[in-house]
Length: 358
Image (cartoon, rainbow, N blue to C red; front, side, top):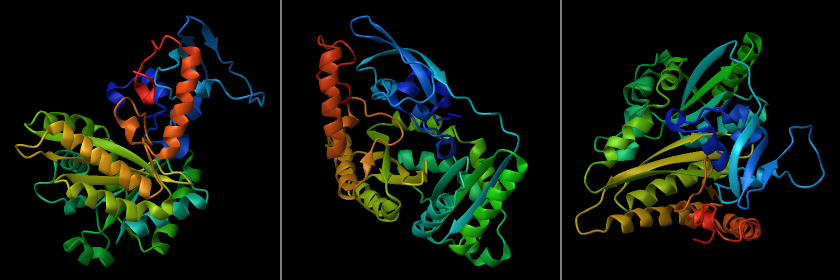
């Protein structure tokens, strides 16, 4: 049930240590939701086993102390995971909306109605991508460029297809399970999408995206070898009411620094969604590369904090990104550092990660 976009070069230990969220987290949850118990070795050599047993209320779950700790408290050596059945039936669908606000409103309403799609994704209409978009934004868009352009467009949307509005967004959905359940969810999704002004595009865009879902990882790498180019990706958790205004603010913030951005809404949950922000571009001669890179992250972090969002939604904070987290996250990491001093007084377990002492 866990399929991150880095699937081809990630490991189970990495997923657990960063509490990663995969492409199917809208239905199956994060890797931490699938972990039923684990074994870890602490700094003093003590081996800890968290029992795989029915849910208990006797104190905190120690497994969740180690999940997402990024190796600062111990080394995870084994894990017991919940498995999901192989798909009996899988179905795709896509809808075009005139704005991100309408698309995100439809998706939020769909989740509130009890539908749990396998995949939820809102992106720009790929045909809107401008020539010369930044390295990371272009690479991300290329991974799905064929999808919407090749999709059959119903008669009522012919004018929209001929002269697509730059504000348009495409909501892509996938469902999985028994055919009757899949059909019922797809039917309800169509009803909700049409109520919010969506135009049905059929399964082709989502099906093509699914076939290329790992491609972006390989397209970004070569771009980073170009001279004076910076690129990265931020994952921002935000309430549904702030999705559209925060997307606009993030793009403005990056463009002010001469960088382009490509924003996708994914990992949708009932209480919030994730804005996956790929950004990049060339840094002018005479400007320090590291200063430009850090400056972009600082500006992103400031915009996210002002919107009440949270950074590092999909996977961990590491050594660099932890400094740009919101105040609440920094308070939690300060508590983690206190726990680390008790479990690892010599500071030998991944020092400097997640704000712990270097």
